Image 1 (tube, one colour):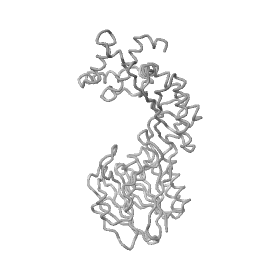
Image 2: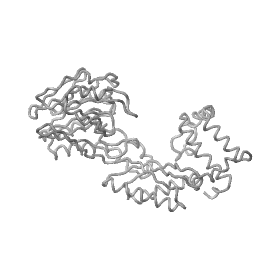
Image 3: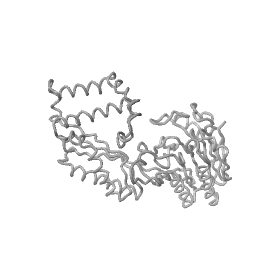
Image 4: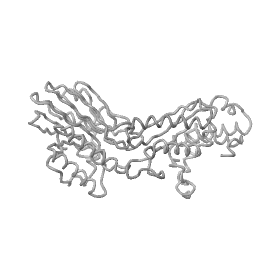
Length: 421
């Protein structure tokens, strides 16, 4: 019996996006998160006394500005060398784009598999064969697995591949392959990388994406880490996930449809954030909060949006005691039928307003007219855009969403409800 670690996509020193602009945000923790996740990986390998470590691509994150990133990686690999643990890696699309990594001198316990052809590394002590091929260029469109050798029956065979597999939303279609193609090689385990969500593609043989070590933005939510794979004497395989992330991204959807007032909204938000914090096991949390539900208070929530968001941010700071930050607050509530009755009035200023907003929002030509403001937005004084978020006049989806918020806000002002806000 032996154990090994299957990890992928550390993306060392990749910037984490979404928190730096907020006053008091844990900027140092954000910037150092990918490094500390790698340190946790090394600690785990040493404690578990694994036979070897596999890293299936994208150790780095494009070109570095200096050698500090590479030297840091060398120092961590040296820790594994001192523990007698070898490392096998394949280069991914981001590694191939990194010119400086090609000249990096690595400790002798680290072996990158070839990029011009499939290569096999044999670990005699464990009767293991690791087959793999890295990316020679930043964009590999062919199925690299087709060239992999057949399994060596006297050995436990592992295939390493940086791949989109059968393609995944949000990931470039690099080195696509099929489950049938992977199974045809006769390997006992496939260690994949590139897709940042943990996923089991096949149970027999086991084909796994471990996900990345550290979430980098709100599209990479939930626990992140690696797999500790145990191989029994009869070649039975189990893979256990181990979280390694130091800052966790989460989405929280809070239904405020039955909330009678703002105090109740804030109370519901507090309960939701408290539950998330308990599950985070003392990690820093970055949360996108979504207020949902059908409520007659929809217009008021939007018209007082800035004050509402600031109160929610204050509640998050209080709940998290400095360890919980809101990446964004989205008001996704809907108005009840009675709140939208003004639209049924064919005449009058409210009916005209509704018609104008609809003509802009639902008509591609109307959105194109608004997109012409893109150049103007870049020339606005900083004091006018501060706190407004990113102005994306060239994005029709963003414009449509903004118009959906503008209509109830204007109606609220016209009816005099927002005068005191």
